View (cartoon, rainbow, N blue to C red):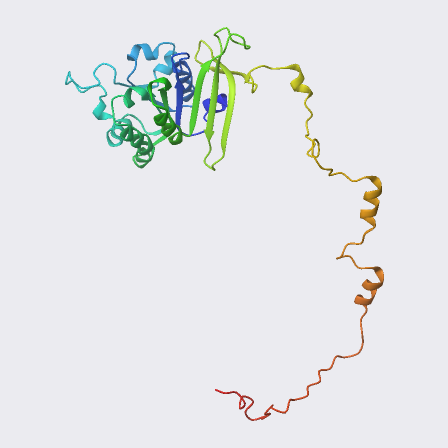
Length: 308
């Protein structure tokens, strides 16, 4: 599922949730590289790292397509230079004006990181900006396909994480691979992806992945439910017998089956009855009417006997 998302298989808000045990910025940068390969303009709102450190590892082709907004050097606007990104600039109207002034068409917006903003701005305000930004940008002529945000899960309360997960279209939780499991040598990681589609269908998948030195995402297969691939798993029958292990019998013996088939169904007619119903008659039907004593038959006024 991760490779499908990297190739543009969905749209909306994508959260990459990491923790102190497994960083998610490398996966974030792989999505950035994939967006540039699709020909999209990529707007990076950087708060956690300096611009040089964020761009480290990208090829010159990718860095030339990045539009970086520096919120790391002067996030409070103390220098007064006004060339960077400040906390006050994180509003849908201000962001739309900056993004549309730089480019038009299809684009990806990257937040590195969303946690930095959540720790310094009111939580409802951040959620409102995330929800309003794509709509306002589309009115201004900018199509935001993705908002890819890095979220440090162990810095926030569970209630805030649940609210953000409900707001997002895709949530990717990254974690380390235990040493006892295949790929537990540190090269691979585990991603639990939750994808809410527009039709309401929810898909969830747990898989191994790694990011190659050129920031290309590579999936290594799905993770078994218990994390251990056993040989007997392949011997599980493809179909399950619903009548097995019941306290009552759902099956019929051969004699019971023949007795059941010999009973005529109520909606099935015998051949004799079918032939009688299908016979045509040549006689014409007649209607005989005998008026009652109280009937007042008047040909000129048929409704004379009605009390109106």
